[in-house]
Length: 224
Image (cartoon, rainbow, N blue to C red; front, side, top):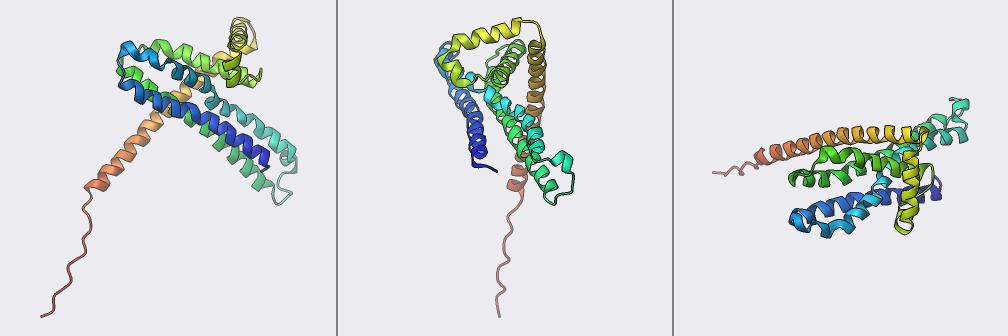
């Protein structure tokens, strides 16, 4: 693997980890904050929202897998070369882990704030559709129009105008965004259930380990 690819991969994973850390910090801080003072967390919440599309954006990196295979002539060479299968498996595993990391951080970034919002009685059923639509718009702007989180910080009006024009103009772009928003919603529900199951399994293992009596060595037999 080239060093530039490794550097870009680590940078993208770092950007994806930022909203996961912010979500954990926000949820922990807002739990001890009265509802009338939650606005104090608005700057950090906006920052979380700006960086959140960097998580699910990693799912789109799977499109590079086909290019990697074509550049190595793997589809045409078949198993003629001894390293063909090895390279095929290596690139497939790389992009599966890379995109999987993005989806995992996507779920981990949302879960703490979702739990907090439920505890405070926020209407999540009404907030979910525009939220996932906003995430799909963010991914589309980065994938097709090459915007990034920094553009939203230093030229927010241009990004907002472009997003509005994309959503209000008929065509394939709007259909892509709507379909991807539904997909992200379903993916989050599945990952949320999986993480709940994983948490329950770990808790069960912990309880079983705590209840298991410690093995004691028998006392040495005394000689008469």
